[in-house]
Amino acid sequence: MTVTAIQRASFTGADVFDLLIIGGGITGAALAHEATSRGFSVALVDKGDFGAATSAATGKLIHGGLRYLKKLEVGLVRESLAERRNLMRIAPNLVCPIPIVLPDPGLVEHLGLTAYDALAFDRNRLSDPSKRIPAHRGLSRAELDRFGLPNLASGMLYYDAMMISPERLTLAFLRTAAAGGAQLANYTRADRLVVRGGRVLGAEVTDLAGGDPGLIRARVTVNATGAWAHDLLAGDPQTAELAGPPPRVRSEGIYLVTRKLSDVMVLTYHAHGHFSFAPWRGLSLVGPTETPYLGRVDEWRLTRRSIEDFLSAIAADNTARVKLAIDDVVWAYGGLRPLTESGAVDTYTASRASELIDHTGQGVTHFLTAMGGKYTSSRAFAARIVGRLAARLGTAVGPSRTAQTVLDGCATPDLPAAIAAARHRTDPAVASPDTAELLVRLYGADAASVLDLARADPRLRQLATADGEPLATVAYALRYEAPVHLTDVLARRTGIGQLGDPGPLVLEQAADLAAEHFGWDAGRRLSELEAARQAVRLPLD
Image 1 (cartoon, rainbow, N blue to C red):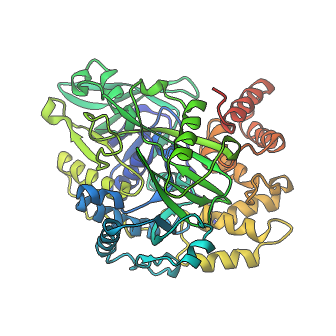
Image 2: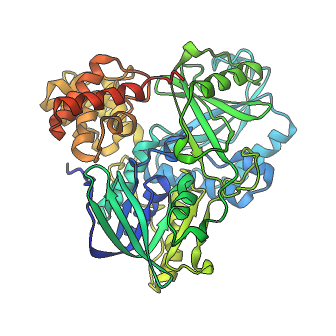
């Protein structure tokens, strides 16, 4: 089976692209796929790794936005519910239903979930039976006990969907775009927009991996840098007036990966908002926080203080009576969310609607900024952007088909059947049935290619995580997915760095594979290994 590889592009200015996308998170990735699928030529750059910033700071939930109903954002809820179904169709291995318990519900919660079910009237129009989402219902005492929730007096059960790996979903969009001809480059910084006569003609860029300057010429440029959108505009004298005043506040969100707390996802509330704990890869994912952040975007980092403050908030006030200590936390991550409303300091109530800004009204043409995108609505947002691009370019395009087109490598139309086949057919000398299942969930139709690598090299059969991910996923990432650093492989191409420190043996073996692939000398290998060690550990300060 042929695997679509992402190759890091270099840009000399020889070609003129229809579209330049600055930002390789989920918004940029979905836009690259949507645009190439409708006949546009696309270049995409990100100054860091694909999906490494705001897109990495996610709770992995694909949801219809139940809490948006409180603000009567019915249109946003309806779009999100439809996109939940669409993502389960186009990435069936990566996006699956998850049961959620709402503790101690009252009349408002009953009415809200009734409306939620009604707005999701078409939720089960999928061929895969494993994607079926039932209507909400109340839980008995015996069911709460069986779910491991003896402290709850009552609860309701409803469903949303969850990504086993948001990073791999971003890569699936990018790989599909690459298969359609998109030119992609991570670690490529947009230094300066090229503006002539009030029209943006592209950008001057620098390949941060090699140090080489470059030029990308494009008919339209989209700023999809998320929390960095203002900084990109303000950092260039030619576009500084477009930036306006800096946002007063951004939303800091962090998540904790902890010992397993429950077999179902549980929402819980405290004085300043909500968080959940959800089962994920044999552990639990707890979050998010909603903390106002007033500093510079590039200066944000996850701190020990943030983790300890979150644990204190959980201990002081949560409706599910969760008890957690620092020793229960195996890993943590977070980031800044871009909000379309920048005036209010209350980040919890700020709108999560996406927004497309055409800067023509500000005197600069062929330049747009995409703000507020999120995983659930990324595909639909991209479809709207391409419609605007077509109008701007005076180009006729056909209707979007991305809601129906399975992403590259994700062709598992009957996920339970694909898992059963993999468990049955995999040579036990190469991988256990549990590893085979995990690889189908992570790699879909390409799971066989990962197993082929393990079959050819016994070193790659070594398990790197407690739930059975082998080192073959490292080799696969190096061969097909354009990492630049070892941390890219461990934190965003695989789950090896996301489930806590895998230990020195695994880190050393992964570093050896990367050094062999890239030809690193001993010094470069050591520096990459040290950076990886820091990335998989909790911060000390």
